[in-house]
Structure formats: C-alpha cells, structure tokens
Amino acid sequence: MSAPTFTLDNRFATDLPELTISWQAQSPPAPTLLLLNETLADELGLDPDWLRTPDGVGLLTGTALPAAATPVAQVYAGHQFGGLQPRLGDGRALLLGEFGDGRDLHLKGSGRTPLARGGDGLAAVGPMVREYLISEGMHALGIPTTRSLSVVATGATVYRETPLPGAVLARVAASHLRVGSFQYAAGTGDLGLLRRLADHAISRHHPGAAAAANPYLALFDAVITVQAELVARWMLVGFVHGVMNTDNVTISGETIDYGPCAFMDTFDPATVFSSIDGWGRYAYGNQPSITGWNLARLAETLLPLIDDDVEKAIEIATETLGDYATRYQQAWRAGMHVKLGLPAGTDDGLVDELPALLEEHKLDYTSFFRGLARGDVALGLMNWVQRWRAHRPDTEAMNRVNPVYIPRNHLVEEALAAATAGDLDPAARLLDVLGDPFTERPGLERYAAPGSEDFAASYRTFCGT
Ligand code: AMP
Ligand code: MG
Figure 1: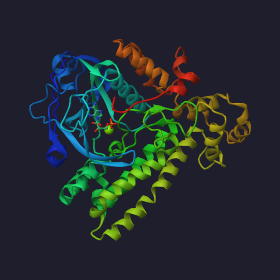
Figure 2: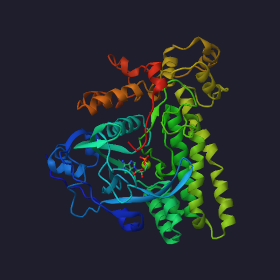
Figure 3: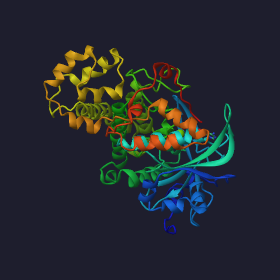
Figure 4: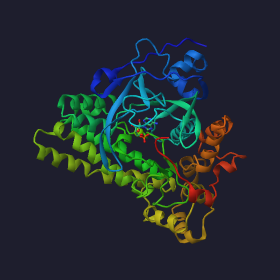
C-alpha cells in the first residue's frame, strides 16, 4: 500500500469565489465503505488499498482532506421544469477540489450546506448505489458521464418515507460547471464574473474556443456540439435522464445527476419514469428538443459577452443555435447507421422508418438490435428487415455497439433493495455485468432480459432522494 501523493487543487474556488461557499462535510458516525471503483482510483493515482483505510475513507467522506484542500458548496441557478430558480446550489454536495488532471472530486450526501433550502443535506444508500451503478454502466457504454468513485455508508439514518441507511457518494467529473452556473453568474449582473466563468469553462473544456474571433460564441458553439452528441447517445441507448433542468446540463458534455433516470424497455417516445414529471416534459422522445431549449437558456446568459450590441448578439447566437437540430440529427443518424450495421452511404429510409416500427410493434429497444443481428425479429417487421438485409449489414460490427446488458430497471431495483438491507453482492454482480455490456456471456441470460410488463407499467423514479 502506498501513501497518498495526490493533491487537491482549488482552481474553481480561486477563479470563481462568487460561485462558492466554503463548507465542511459532516462527520459520519460509523463510516463503512460499500463500493469502491478500483479502476477509477488507479486512473486517478489513488491506491485502492489506501482508500480502504480510515484515512482513505476520510477522503471519500470529505472528513480527512489534504491540508491545502478547501471544500466548497457551489452556487448556481436553474430552470426547474421550466421555472427559473435564481439561487440553487449544492444543498447536500461539496466540491472537494480538483485532481492534477483537472477533474473534480465531489461528494453527494455530505450534510446540509447553506444552500440546502428545506432539505436535510443527506442521501440514502439506495439512491447513491443507483447513481454508482447507472453512471458506471453509462461509462462502459462509452457515453460521456460523471464517474462514481465510491459509496460509503455513514451509519446514520436518513428519513424519507421510511427510515433508511445514509450514504455518501464520491464522484469524479470533468467539472461541475452547468448551464445553471452561467445563469447564476449572468443573474448577478456582474459582467466580470460572467467573463471569468466563461474563460474558466473555455480553458477547462473547450480550449479551442480561445483562439476563435469570438471566443464566447465559440464556447457556445462547442457546448452545442457536445450536448447534441450527448443527447444523441442517450437516444441511441434508450436512456431517459428524467430531470433535464438547466442545473443538470453540463458545459463539459458529460451526463450528470442520476436521480430519476432509467432505461426504456419497450420502445415508446412517451416513456417517463419520474414521479414528478406528470406532463412528460422530460419524456424519452422530448429529450432532443429539451436540450435545444436548455442551450437557448445558455445562449441568453452569454449574449453580453458575444457582442456589446444586444440585437447583434441575439442574431449571432440564434444563428449558431440554429445548427443544433442538424448536429443532433447527424449524430443520431450516424449512430443508428452503425447500430444497424449498414455500410457507409446506404440507408434508403431504413433509419428514419425504424422508430415508428419499434413503437407500433412494442419491441424491447435494447434486445431488438441484438436479435436483428442474430436473425431473430418480429414478424411484422419482415418487409423492413428484407430491405435491411439487402444491404448485407455487418452483424459483427452491430454487436460491438449494441449492448446485451444495460442497467435494466428491475435489476437495478433488486440490487438497491439488497444494498439497503446490507447485502452489496447483487450490486457488485450487476456492476460486473454492466462493465462489459457488449459481450454476451453464458449464464447471464437474466441480465439481458426485460422485466415483466407489470413491473414496467408501475415503475416510478424519484428526485432529491
Ligand atoms: P437534483 O434534483 O438532485 O438535481 O437536486 C436539485 C437541488 O436540490 C440541488 O441543488 C440539490 O443540492 C438539492 N437537494 C436535493 N436533495 C437534497 C437534500 N436532501 N438536502 C439538501 N438539498 C438537496
Ligand atoms: Mg442536480
């Protein structure tokens, strides 16, 4: 076991003090490490054996930090289900600092901060294991995401509808800059702050923008690209984020905030899991247009940096945003082309016709593509399948991009119920399966199958857990 040599920088806190509140994590009464991501720890230069010691667990709960670390709660704003909240922020989270590679180390469930509003600042084991499972599943699928480093049970009880065991998640992200960070900075009216935030975002995530004739327009353009590609990736795997508020939309293009998210089984654009999304604002099929709406909110904040003349700034930003739909369509179409194993340049409408067919025949979205490659498809699709076959699709290439195993809702819930009861084995097994989603393995049939229709019909997910 090697002594820790890592540092935690505080570049965010130094560059942008107006967006931070210095704060300390609450000490857990009886911390127990439940899950540790050894691969990620290695990548960060953290010795997994050291992380298992009391000092290591102290890092993972924010209670024993390197001397120079200055943990902060981040302040941001956000449109939540369309309504602007001018002052939100980390109510139960803390930014501990940045590793040498620039990535954030962040905690969730580390106690109330001055931004907690009515919340208790805590998190329960189930939802933190859920974030760990799904974010690591997304990573294995090749989708940009925040990562999960650990879940530590605190030994304290958290009160939700029932008493639950408490936990702290440690997550790693390219940064925690969100559209909501820009909304907060713009809302202060301090143009210097907004410029510093934009410069920080450029140097951290989109350095190419710095050399552009209009760096802030180039920043906006770069965020459009990464978000268009991200939402296309979600659509291609059937991921429903569930709470695409502007405070949950990153500037880096990583998926963040695994609260009410879930994977769709039967293909249906109207799929909603979140208990509070009665209107279906964040339904599966709405995600691309909601991302466009969220990007428009980002554009509004950047206007004063884009041009001194507001009218001109609006014109330029609107023109740039106009490209979003095209970039999304291109990314989705290219991805679907690969999922279908079609040779480059061929399509003849197959890609565009597919969603309606999947919906009409109520097909399991994930299994459809593996079944297609195996020659196992629903009868109603024969006409489409014959046309598809005529292109001599590359079924091996299909199996390299179409997962066999995704975090199916019933499997996730089974693992969370066990974790809440103190048994981490099902979560560990599921993580193992999800870590290699494209290789079909004998004995793992139940991990590939959809849940029962009854389970799917009544499945609900929750925010602020
Ligand atoms: P989320 O839906 O997880 O993005 O949360 C929205 C906001 O509510 C964030 O600013 C969180 O920090 C805050 N929040 C959620 N749950 C709690 C809690 N139990 N205690 C304090 N703040 C919370
Ligand atoms: Mg959030």
